[in-house]
Amino acid sequence: MYLDMKHALFCIYLLTHLTSGQLTDSHLSNGMRKWPVPYRRFDRRPEVDPFCQALYPFCPTGDRDSRIPYMRNSDVISVFRLQAPVWEFKYGDLLGKFNIMHDAIGFRSKETGTNYTMEWYELFQLGNCTFPHLKPGVSAPFWCNQGAACFSEGIDDLHWKQNGTLEEVGEITGNQFNDLARWVQEDNETGIYYETWTARSDPSGNATVWFESYDCSQFVHRSYRKLSELGAKLTSKTQTNYTKIYLYSGEPTYLGDDDTIFGQASMKSLASDIRNFYHDFQPHQSTLDAIISIIEAYKKVVLEKNFYLYYNFQYWHLPMKPPYVRITYEEIPLP
Ligand SMILES: *[C@@H]1O[C@H](CO)[C@@H](O)[C@H](O)[C@H]1NC(C)=O
Ligand SMILES: *[C@@H]1O[C@H](CO)[C@@H](O)[C@H](O)[C@H]1NC(C)=O
Ligand SMILES: *[C@@H]1O[C@H](CO)[C@@H](O)[C@H](O)[C@H]1NC(C)=O
Ligand SMILES: *[C@@H]1O[C@H](CO)[C@@H](O)[C@H](O)[C@H]1NC(C)=O
Ligand SMILES: *[C@@H]1O[C@H](CO)[C@@H](O)[C@H](O)[C@H]1NC(C)=O
Ligand SMILES: *[C@@H]1O[C@H](CO)[C@@H](O)[C@H](O)[C@H]1NC(C)=O
Image (cartoon, rainbow, N blue to C red; front, top):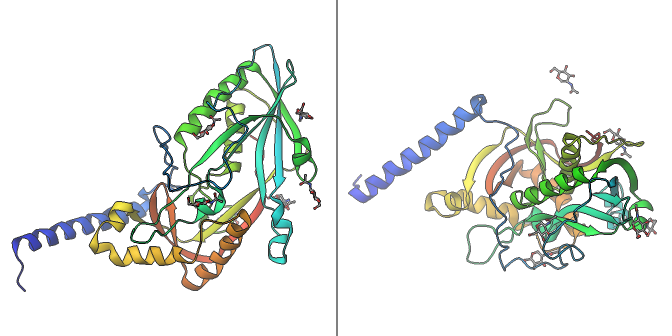
């Protein structure tokens, strides 16, 4: 076979590139890869791409400059656990059996009587954080997957209490609150994208977790852990359960990022597999539609036993196995 110099160099490049990739992979699967893969932190939150247009404004009653009020140290701040169902899920046979909850934390100042709600959620709703857009003429799927913290004045008692939870779980000092506020702002700047799925090896208590979700309830857990680190004592009279959306798979394989997968001719078939995988799921939909798509993902993964997970702006292949996909409502105790 005749090869000119340019082709020969390209082949050598390809060989070394692919070989080193494979070596890295087997090396890592010999126990070097740390699971779960750490969620990537950024130096700062980037501007949102203008392609991503929110149907509902994010944090409409929050401070425009994202300020959190300062509390005097002599103040006593009550901490509330807030949880409410996403009501649409009461309707329809398929959805009725799931507890799909949204979680938040409330605060109330004893000195001023003012109360506040703090939560973390998608900028462009669940569908956009779970499934990408396939733009015509653009190879890489496009994600509108930012999520962020919202701190706003007021607690809507009725919303949380009537069908959910509004429970005081502790008290903190003004200084502890101000320390938490600083942490929230840093967490909000560095943790920028929403991740719907938790991927693990099986449903047992011993399972290996491959990837952790990054959603409203994870924010609540991080905040509780921070409060406990700051010295707060938190207790609940009831079981503290949270919604989790699981994928079950064998050990995942790292595939690459947008540039390596969608920017190289040699990766064409992988690129089209990923596009085909996401082709059936539409991102621009209501939360109800998003959950229906998640349930439909079940049929597709049972059939094909493949899942292409986007995590840290990189793609991973998950060799799916029973029970494939599950939505649970399980206890995660306060720290
Ligand atoms: C999802 O993103 C698309 C593209 O920006 C946008 O048109 C749509 O409104 C978003 N969906 C929601 C529910 O915000
Ligand atoms: C978090 O970041 C978003 C997006 O920049 C901003 O709108 C929001 O106010 C921030 N939240 C807090 C609590 O700083
Ligand atoms: C929060 O403040 C509002 C307005 O004053 C009040 O109606 C509500 O009961 C308060 N909720 C809590 C949990 O403090
Ligand atoms: C609580 O549930 C009832 C019955 O499903 C419903 O009619 C009501 O609107 C819910 N309340 C709130 C605040 O969502
Ligand atoms: C954890 O693993 C051990 C040993 O492999 C097994 O005996 C035990 O039943 C497992 N526990 C759970 C909760 O799956
Ligand atoms: C809460 O979680 C526990 C343990 O994870 C579970 O046994 C219980 O059934 C859950 N409660 C509800 C209401 O689903």
